Length: 343
Image (cartoon, rainbow, N blue to C red; front, side, top):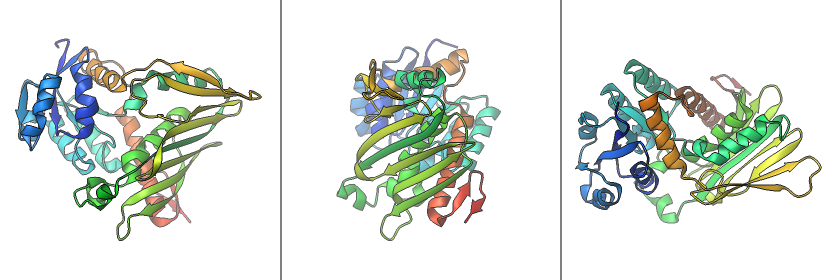
């Protein structure tokens, strides 16, 4: 295969315009062949700035373009599975925005189709590629905080009243995969599983829903990991901005009090405190474009077959925990991950 892959983009979403298309345009192993948007004029400026060769009106045109190796899918959540399956069946590799699907069964179907067609499928969990994440994993593996016992993670922001009242906002439509849990709760669940290095056995959750709706605006979930670890995750569309997580262990703690998931390209700070240490140590990790690192890794998987940093199995397991949290919030029950409930 050539040393660069050609990309097609399905939809001119904000995350594509602001983060992923610029990342591909400046990557060492990719270029954008085509962008599909129902409003082509909206893509003209992106063509100029990101080197896009072709504008299409139809997503199918991108998938059927023989010059395209991979597609990036930043569509509303309920469309992730359908368009991923179409792209994989056409022999295209797929980088799909989070959450990978609306539930674990959809994710499993996507994984089976990727395997059947010998294609790479990856969920766009960009924070996993930032050097800061790797540094924290190293600190934990080296025993800096002892045995990890507790993870706390929050991704919250406040939607404008205009957005909260908009009938076109898919994030507030349960039939379109909306809700804070799926949209940003996936980050906290992923962080807890990553740093505790195992799967939760049971979850509890409470949610605040939009008046007259089943769409969660604010969710708090508790996860239990055998034998002795816990996690708390918070996701919200209606609280002040929070992007934080912390890991507490038997001999110390690591804290990211701000910009925990999207530090952009500025220097990223880790606050580390060992037992008995009154003032935390500030560990500075140089800024990096985690989106560029993500798309380059995806390209390396296609070109060189490198080991995935975010595997499809990992994404399926994340979806299974999100499924359980959703059920726990709806029922008020303690839910075993995998489907059983306990009053």
